[in-house]
Amino acid sequence: FRRWWQPPRKASEREEERSVTFLELFYDLVYVVLISQLAHSLAMHVNLEGVIGFGFLFALVWLAWLNGTLYHDLHGNNDIRTRVFTFLQMFTVAAMAVFAHNAFGDGSVGFAISFAAYHLIITYLWWRTGVHDPLHRPLSQPFVYTYLFSTILFLVSAFVPPPLRFYLWGIGTLVSVLMPLVSFVRRPSDPEVLAEHERSMRPSPSIVERFGLLTIIVLGEVIVGVMRGVAGHHHLTWEVGITAALGMLLSIGIWWLYFDFVSQHMPFDGLRSGAWIYLHLFMTMSIVATGAAVLNVMEHAGEPMPADVGWLLVGAIAATLGCIALLMGTIQLDPRYLPLYRRGAIVAAVSAILSVGLGFLSLGAIPLLIILVF
Image (tube, rainbow, N blue to C red):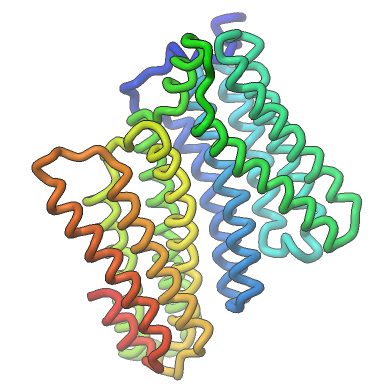
């Protein structure tokens, strides 16, 4: 039975060189649906309120994905226990996807309960690591208390009316975001615990691979936006075809920049490792927003483009380029290529600034996309 239902793997037994498993890929698959729901909701509400709501919900979803990903990398085993708890997390993420499109409306209660259920599972898992690994307990306990507090807030929010419900969500999210940041900064005084801390906070090659896979998932939302936009036109014209091709080129360009300049490179240890992690939050969020903007651009192909759609597009592209530029400063590089990367980061940062400037111009969809692509 112990062979089938093993205790959590100790962080000291973490495999530094391993490939992402099919279970992890299956786990990521359910997030495809949830992220797609968030992108569709943003595409339907292209305004300041919609963007803020999307950013908040995406941060919740991304934190959930990060928790499940880091736990599996540090403590997962190839046993039934790991599979059972992974599948339980997938059920709660799927439930979140059901309510995500209307999470600030009629679906808010369902979303709060689903998210609380997810947090309860991940809180239990982090707690069990401390039970079976006393050396890891000083590190896992703060996460347990933080996530238990957040879980209670989300659960209580289901029984109070808006806007208090959403204030509780905000508090729960804030503490969940700050706890990992505190962990990166705090250095235990005990040498053994300090070694455990540094080992746990150091991203492994498999984590770098998982972040790349999530980037692939969100880039798929840009392609989905193009396809949905084309399908929404009953009569295809050359304007629709050119706009679709340029939308595809946007996703290709982002893929090219990220996977040539950022992915497959290990981040530095310490604070820059934390920056590497959280910059991926804003980069992936911006890519999904790009997909929502492209869908709206496609719907107005051959017509004057609304100003809010244009601002969403240029803002999302600018944020994506800015994050990629900053990510280049968080990764370990061969000294021979440092000048190339410095120039690349400068070009990406300047391109981000120029992209924002395009929002002040009254450009049509095709000219705007041509400038952004090239």
